[in-house]
Image 1 (cartoon, rainbow, N blue to C red):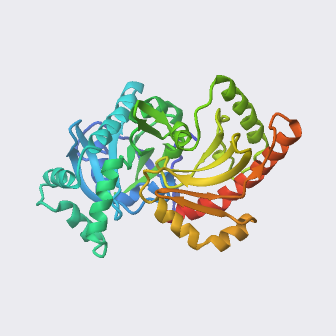
Image 2 (tube, helix red, strand yellow):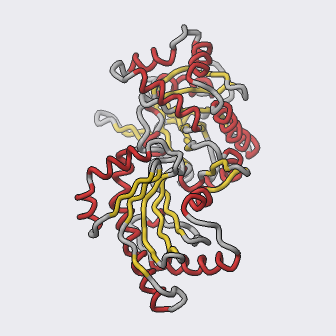
Image 3 (cartoon, rainbow, N blue to C red):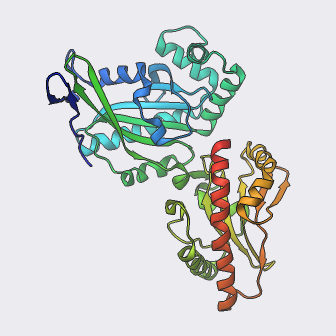
Length: 398
């Protein structure tokens, strides 16, 4: 549906009547304009349907408005009790160019923040709020006095360093498909942000109050579009995972693998088909991104030609600090995991690299039709089992 329906007020004593929508305007005293919307969202962050964009994010704590980033002032800065940073930009949407500019604008704000420290963010927030040093902690304690200070400060620092932000563009009359965001995201690949477009309609109530009706128009699936900065420039999530788990094949091998994994994906059945890759891999591994966000975790179906083995495993990037911790938490539940998957799972940790895998099967020649069908059938059976059992646990641990 592309338009808001008008809410209906029913008064049993009188009658039903439609509410009048208030258009978002560029100015005017007492009108529903950008500044009014910005202030309303800052004072009442519960107006934002953030759980529809990221179900794992914590409650929003208002910090300040108009925080100067070095690329311009961001309209609203929130933090969560765990230290994640949320930026909001409120805008009128009147033409395609304005829409493109505001998306690029909020991404530039986020890019600037990745070079900041906790102290610099606190200083900028203090200045914008016309407060005293320590503004971030005061905001936290005003809402959540029991949250550990060191944990919060460390969380903010990690969010800044990793670019792990939630970016929200909120306005009236937004018409901007998710596919149109791709060209922007490719230029900001080192950030682990989630991006959401929210349209807000305002309606005048009989008593003079204002009813805000938000809806999420588009959101990015971070795992599907994460790009990581490699030594020679940006590389995709698929390439990053491949760099850790498999050697890069030549062109003839890529074609062979593409055919193999296309047959695998045709046979694969997942509870949620949106988790299925949109195209077959061109290497030894077919990857399935897993929580936590940021391209740090995946389940991989693989074929190892050198050892004549095929299987499925979960792993994390070597640089993901929480990988070993999450691995240990999963290990505590190994008996239940074995029962739910239906096989005895294998656990392996070498320094900061971990693997949770189902038993591998051996093969002799995958060019032989019977062998290939047998291996594909096994991978297509085990992959959804591992995803179904581990994904909810990873989401909870994230």
